Length: 266
Image (cartoon, rainbow, N blue to C red; front, side):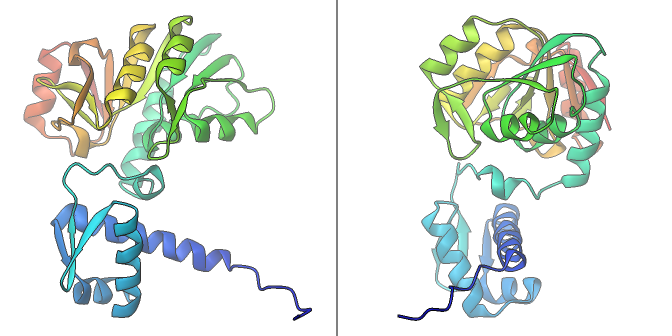
């Protein structure tokens, strides 16, 4: 038996791989089909490493391998850990503008799961006058680590794609609460389709958060504006404010404003 301790994983290597996987997912999403040779050149990797990463992503249901490359899986929802690297600058601006919408007085604020809502939550550290209610475990853990933050976590069935608790248990929990503001992330928002998400069960839970709130602030980068996904949460007119970035399609922004949504471009 070898008495030497097993080597510990190098965090830098793990981070680099996470970045690589995210970059590959982004490339497949943007181009639908990618070639191993192109990815190897773009990412500075060997073709063998690209093939291994493609195999990992296929096993996770994020793409489909084809001869010499990979193609997207229609309707696939990418987990938060892969979406977190996208449009970071826009999400940071959106989050900062969203926080400015919150008055400095005691209030219950509900926050749904998502990468942009997580950015908002990070900027609420120190706002001890707020009671934060969330069904996103990653947001709850991040905020609860700071003294003075009051965080209430909804229970339910965990969605690995978004780290959110959803389902009947979560819905019953939400039904007994009232919120001054709900901050919601979505997979799509349009005047015709309303607020939408990939998962029907999640849509039902998000609907409860919206309906129990006096104001509904939607935070969504421009790639979500004009997009319609599987399940409607609520109609667009239910949103009080949409905070998005200046790359949002102007025609859809106009339609949302005509529907009664206060659209803030940052």
